[in-house]
Picture 1 (cartoon, each protein chain N blue to C red):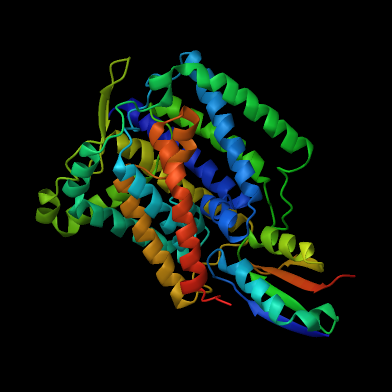
Picture 2 (cartoon, chains in turn yellow, cyan; picture 1 turned 135 degrees about the horizontal axis):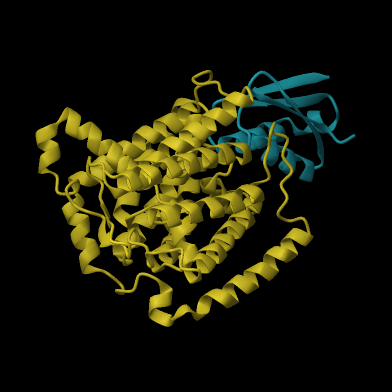
Length: 369
Length: 79
């Protein structure tokens, strides 16, 4: 643990706090963006997410060419496999049942939502369940890798980026001219989601430059599980291969060793993800408190919804470890880099979200006509 | 005019909009005639976007007020 690590940790904590604040103000719910596509056949916020992905793509592209990004591809992305397919599908179902994604759960919890507390617990438990059967899924991943390339650019060259960025720029300009990015909402202190989208892209760039890895968060849940397990059942913890492995270990151009994994260690994953997790909760807490909207445990959701949130959380924790990441790493960071894992994760996330929407509507709310 | 109060505070997404729409449909004729209005209590910030959007598209008028830590969304027949 050197000074640079602490400095990075502080930058990420501040970034996370700002993110949590913005997420709460705009109610920037990625689970909702995808779910509403199936539930209401329209999702205006998905356009906003598109803006986020392409602003991030532009920023990462420029920063890479300006020499600000040291590790490319970033070490926290890996090859896609059948485990990505399975994980992405289950993740889609889980986020609808949980009522929020991996980061949505954090900002909702920070604002005092009891449902989000249930899905947070589920996420930690889901991550620890994965640790029990990790060898099986690791074998599946190793044996079913589609290609050794991590980014589309490695396979087909860098020529994709400029045309994609230009086309998206034109599309976004059209939307903005027609007012299709603007959201009418009556919530106090509402921040237009499209502003939040641009801020997330900027914050992601800051995180990538300062830590060497773009924004990711779900391994932090596995780490929380690891610290708890090591404390409660040290001998069992020691017996689990999952907590001993390293997610990545690389040497950066300036000589730092960047390595870390899900285990209960203060490593690079800890520095890059734990302050983000804490920051998002803190930022949302500050936002809701300042609006007089922080009312923890005042009203509990009906039991079926609470159970749904918990089970959804378990699915999110389990599936993000199976896929090797969650929507934050794959969609917010991976898509802008044209990561093959990110693209595949998005494709399978959609049918998974459809399944989750069906279950929520018909089994949890019992709204069958 | 009757105020039909629907308290969905604490419920997780997307329950807010779905339950509100169901309640609205169940009382459709009374609300359309102006005999009743539906008052939804929610602590879900996004519901102040989704519910007004959906019900204005269905031809109702809507009013949102902030209360102590939650929002009160009143849905009435179109003025």
